Amino acid sequence: MSRHAFPPEQVEGVYRAIRERRDVRHFTPEPLEPGQLERFIAAAHNGPSVGLMQPWRFIRIADPALRAQIHSHVDEERRLTAEALGQRADEFMRLKVEGILACAEVLVVGLIDQRERYVFGRRTMPEMDLASASCAIQNFWLAARAEGIGAGWVSLFDPRRLREICRMPEGSQPIAVLCVGQVEEFYKAPMLEIERWDQRLPPRQVLYQDSWGQPAP
Image 1: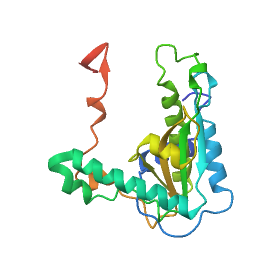
Image 2 (image 1 turned 120 degrees about the vertical axis):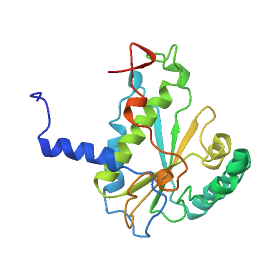
Image 3 (image 1 turned 90 degrees about the vertical axis):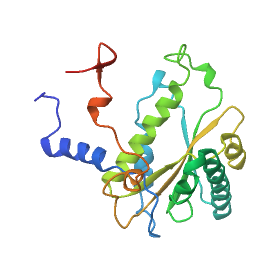
């Protein structure tokens, strides 16, 4: 084992958080403990960032009326998504896809405006700002799971409309509504697997060697 490795029990803790992280939709009404949300934000802010641009911003939604407005917009987009799914519309409408009104905390995560100023690592791949912010959200998710707190990433919204609702500057882009809170239990498997919407591929199907589609030994 590398001399830089964590102690075995800490290594297992990291892998356990990864294995047992869930996109949570069911919450109990208890609030978070003091300091928890701040720790999760700090974990997110320690995420890797292309060119150290740190493109993420977090808006904590404290106003109940604003939370209700976000929920109403997400529910509207949920219905439009169902229409776009065609034959799977009814199946989709039976899924619980958000917990905005039930969770302890709601956060809107957005990318900063004027991102074109950041060229380092983005000259040919400008979408790396989104990749960086996604890593930050994953850090948030894993930190929350390690402390027994559920988090769910909601993406059913029109970015332009959500930007208006949250009074974000022109050029910024909301990428997530995060529902965060206490849970009765964590799902034994991803909810969409439990609901038979789809299933996770085995690792061997996503690992190639030397060329696309060439299975690794």
